[in-house]
Amino acid sequence: MPEQTILKVGNTMLRFNYEQNDAALFLALGAALAEVQALEFHLVQMMGLLLSNEGASHEEVTDQFFQVTLGTLARKMRGEVGAPELAEALERVVKERNHLVHGFLRAHQWPMLSADGYLDAIQELDRAAKFFRESGETITLALKKAKDLPVFLLRINPETGLPEHL
Image (cartoon, rainbow, N blue to C red):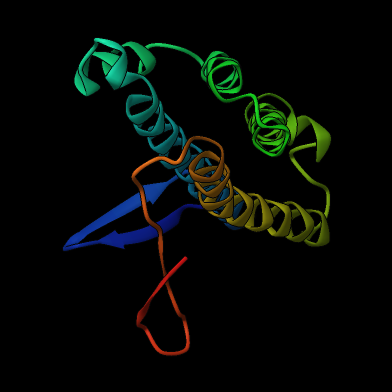
């Protein structure tokens, strides 16, 4: 029987029947997937800004796009905007997301045979999470430039903790 990994959330102790390396891997995988979902939510909101002036309300547009896949959302966004910079960013997001969801564990030959294998996979997941976080900014700036959307971006400076307008 695998060892139990214990995490404390609030006052509750959670026990998982995973080896410690698997628990760390799945935690990193979950964090990367959370970044994907946050980016998908952001892209749907951007589609709401793009299309809500065409007769449908923002809510109607976003409700529609919350029901489609990321690939469909990206294709629709590329069609609406047509900017090469945006198309490239969206294509990479879809490719990276599909790898994460459909091929990551297979690519790393899970379960890994060594701690180094787990570390390599976890480091890739950390890079993926960062990529998805940064992609929202890249895509928003490309949309703003191509369509003059009424959006502004703030980035929190990690050294000062203060927001910076982009």
